[in-house]
Amino acid sequence: MRRVLVANRGEIATRIVRACFDEGLESVVAVSEADRHSLPALLADRAIVIGPARAADSYLSIDRLLAAAQVTSCDALHPGYGFLSERPELAAACEENGITFVGPSAEVMRRSGDKVTARDLAREIGVPTAAGSDGIETAAEAVAVAEQLGYPVMLKAAAGGGGRGMAILPGPDELRSRFSTSRAEAEQAFGDGRLYVERYIARARHVEVQILADSQGNIVHLGERDCSCQRRHQKLVEEAPAPGLPGELVEGLREAATGLGAALGYVGAGTVEFLVDLETHSFVFLEVNARIQVEHPVTEAVTGIDIVREQLRVAAGEPLSFSQADVELRGHAIECRINAEDPAAGFVPSPGTVTGWLPPAGTGVRVDTHIREGDEIPPYYDSLVAKVIVHAPDRAAALELMRRALGRFRIDGVTTTLPLHRDLMSDDRFVRDAVTTRWVEEDFLPGWETSH
Image 1 (cartoon, one colour):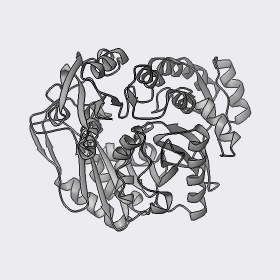
Image 2 (cartoon, rainbow, N blue to C red):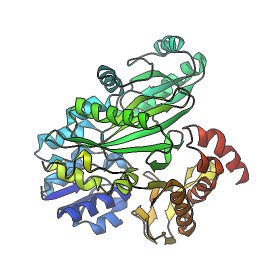
Image 3 (cartoon, rainbow, N blue to C red):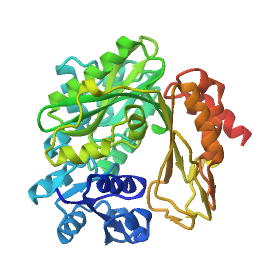
Image 4 (cartoon, rainbow, N blue to C red):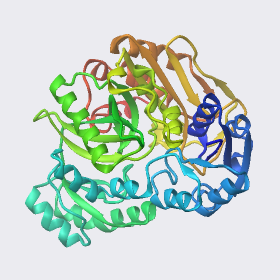
């Protein structure tokens, strides 16, 4: 492997370019017209324009990405996260054209990406799953299943995650009225409108386990992350390790994650996600994300392992550079996602020109970004502008360091979620306890929005 096409944009493109540099690999960034002067394009060895700003004509075009890889003689392609990163069609197209895909095979991606199939596999190997249905085609089927499970229920897309098509339904009327909307959302997002129904866990934490596997059969976990601080199924804050979980539960999560990865024949970096039921102190399998995660830096911070470099090495056929015995979690890490959105106005996007940019710096502080002063934040893509990651000896110290880091972060010209994150880090409830997946929406935001 000599030259890698970075088939993504934003901060993850910057992150991959830097990992390529560290590995001694050349990088070519595929950019839309809107991103031709972006930081990733300047940092890479080369940038190639693949189409207009609209994602469907650039970052979501397999044909354009393959053509870019071939024209620039790239022998590998890294999909990052989002866009086409979990589309088996891209992995298959790379395989068919002799380009190394930095990720699992198309077949593994199909099996892990289909939520119903992944649930079935989890059950087969003894991993707990929430009570629910197989794929369903009609609202009547959904109601019939929900009547057996008991309300409220979750309606989910079988072919993808990220909150697309997902809804919590308190009764049959709401389920019937929501079904067609969820199906349309799933069809648009994933090209697959299949849905399934699952029992809703009212008081739950979202905990995920990072795994890495190579083609020699080695598979390891890098500990767990807590991603419960979220709004509308979109994560706001992540922590590693997940605070306050019993040791026996943690071991169960880790064993379930590596067991599922082994059963899938997984190769590369992946994340196995779970819901932890606070009422029963048990967990159920949620899904597999067959790609690098936005929140991977908190795991890198507590393990000292560069996950993106390991991805590149594994894709090149090398074994993992460490064993499970080498993995030791040190201290505590927290990540805040800073978006160009107005949280006081319903999180409406805030595109525009960044007229002032002064990120925090210091020991234990890391900022992953693609933004510089004077950059334009376009309206066409995800609004993430930066990730602030801190690492300290324990959670209390990490929270204090994050409060200071966010206090020093200055962004002018666009509205961002910085004020929200500053208040989150100072909220006694968040500081004192591990929160549930519904805490931000049900407990934090109502009072915060009133005061802002």
